[in-house]
Image 1 (cartoon, rainbow, N blue to C red):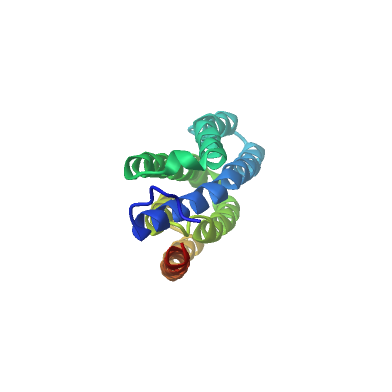
Image 2: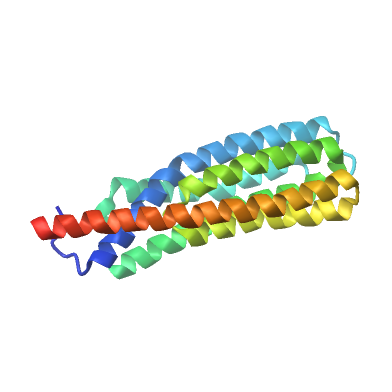
Length: 211
């Protein structure tokens, strides 16, 4: 049943999409930490020459910055009544926004810190990781197209810059493929979000008619 204090179908649709984002984000923080650990391990194997930041320090920073958002997200999921009302939704959306920025920003730092000195093999490995992260973001952040765009931007933009600056033919190919991949995935994200939002809204409208 719809909450008694529901002011509009749009508000409830917004709340349901935000709850979906929180449910998906809870596992995303843990998965992000595991994948970041894999990248830090590979970066350590490359040696410290040319690294502007220790991989272990970077990994610790990723964990510390993302941990508060994990617990805040878990709080919202355990207390869905805290998301009732426009002001509460505004606050929760800001939390999700900053959580997305910090998660994507961690990868921006990792790319800038290790890709230039890591060699072409490392950049290929990093590209594969980022492709997987981007694909996961399309489904996990489908509740908001804005968050998908922000996350993709924080992953794709630095990778494109780094590979173009590297200057090899393979790096140029990586940069071009990254652009095409980002455009294609953002298009898919837009369609998925529209379908999800429409489906959620129609479901709420049906419930409102039965209430």
